Every structure is written in C-alpha cells, then in structure tokens.
Image 1 (cartoon, rainbow, N blue to C red):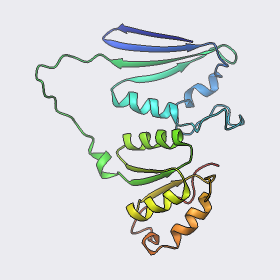
Image 2: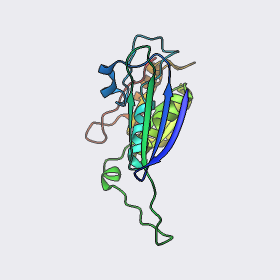
Image 3: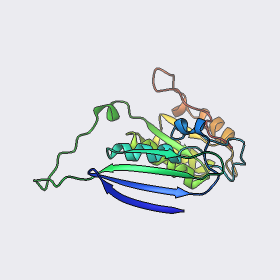
Length: 196
C-alpha cells in the first residue's frame, strides 16, 4: 500500500494506492453511496456495513473537497483520491461560520443501537454530520434506558443484540405509553432497521 500527498493548483491531493482485489468499473459510480457494498455475498465478518466510504465523502464534501476511486478491475488494485482545497490565509483572526439552515430545520433525534461499536459510532458520526442529534446504545437494556429517557424520534435498531435482541427491544418500547405516538406527532419509527 502507498500513501501519496501532493499540492497542485492550490489543492491538496491525498492518494491511497493498493494492489488488492480491485473494483469492477460498474461498481465505481456507486462506491460512495450509503450502505452500498461491492460484494454483498461476502461473509459479514469480512465486509462492512457500507457506511465508511459514504462517511468519507460526507466529511470531504463538508470541507469543500471531493473523493473518488479508480481501479483497472478485479485483481489489479485500487486508488482512492481525496482532493481538498488549500486554506487561504485570513486577514482577520475571526472567520464567520456559515451554517446551512436546512440542517437545523430537518434535524431529527436518533437513537442508534448496535453491539458493533465501530459501526454504531461511524453511523452516529455520519448522522451528526448531517445535523441530527444522535444517542448511542450498545445492547438492548441500554437501548431501553436511553430511549425512555431521551424519547428519540427515530430508532435504528440492530436485530442481533446480545442478551435482548432487537425484536424484544422494539416490543418492550411499544408497551410504554411514552413511545405510543401517532405519525402526526413524530416521524414514523423504524422497528427494527439494523442487520443481524
């Protein structure tokens, strides 16, 4: 694997090159889509959830850059490129921060429940970068406690939780009066939406 950093035309280019399994040309346009997986048939222990590259794209875009991937095909390795603009020197020590009003207008409170901490934290970071308020829980009992305390508008709930699975958590939450809200009160809840 090679990491190359260069400055060209007032931009930073960060290139990560490998000689791994490579990527088919047909998969390249979808590679940075949320939950997209090139090899969905691969055992989950080897594959991710399809959020990592979407998160990278979101963060890079927020910084005024872009990211793309190149590959000559299967067995020929891949190259991922991030382009970020160089910062211009500011004349004042204070810079105004422009906030997109759409982020606050459409923001939701979301509870992410997954025993895979890396997956939960990655999804939390992605949702937070879109302006949402996110709470995390790593098992069913903790999910109940956080949900009843915070009353989130959306719950993203993994099915395969240790001790108390996602179905049991969803059933338990539905029995609490605080959670019995109509679609006119809150956005529709997602029960359960995680993958085991």
